[in-house]
Amino acid sequence: MEFACHTWAFNDLTLSEALGTIARMGFRYVDIGSGQNLNAAKAAANPQRAAAEIAEDLLVFKLKVSDLYLMLPRISAAEEDKRQKELELFKALLPFASALSTPGITVSPGVAQPAEDEEAWDRTVAALREMYTDAHEAGLALSVEPHLDSMATTPEQALRLMQDVPGLQITLDWAHMVCQDIFHEEIVKLLPHVRHVQIRQAARQQLQTPFERGRIDLARVIADLRAAHYDEVVCIELMNIPGWHGMMKVDALRESLKLRDALKAARDAEPVETG
Figure 1 (tube, rainbow, N blue to C red):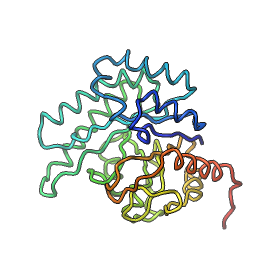
Figure 2: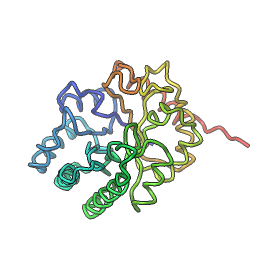
Figure 3: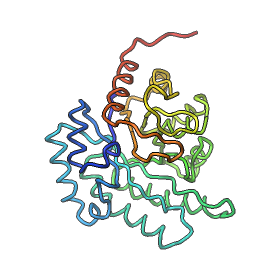
């Protein structure tokens, strides 16, 4: 099990600067996400050139991509043109993703729709089925991140998506579960479907907290991942959206290092036999 850091922690920097910062902290894997330091539309317009520029930095900084997160939240929207625009952008970005040698792509399950919109779930499923088919044909794994304000906020909704979209997997952000006061025993039910894991400290109604104030038992998380035979990368994902679901502003460098060290200590500790 290895550890990565997400570029979203440093969205005030250029992507090259973010990659350099992550490498200097000793990480060898990085999650890259579209947004402020990666313009998805520009990458789609010239995917080979965009990927080559990033690949050059990855080589210099001795980093490997552990996941590519493409923010396409309108796949659940009622407006056909908005959904189609997201689907077309996703398809246009697949050559970029392949050229980056990412093992997979994470997307949102779509922004939450009004409760009276009875067709929202079917629209979301249809979009994800199309995205999965396109990704599969490109040789890329696809997963959704169950997150707040989305069509899949809870383990139950995420598992329903797994049933309705065969082959789809989960990118599990533990903080989105803990923020909702979802018990650990419910979270681990998702592990058989998990392709990628993201972690930061959080607490009830606080989507991000400083390390010392968090309520996530990192040693228990690592132990359960190991028990589920998860041996892929765990990414430290810090965000700079203070106030969103109680998210607290933290020092990205300090928090990343604290989380890295705690995760490494948990991974390297001798497993405790129970029973």
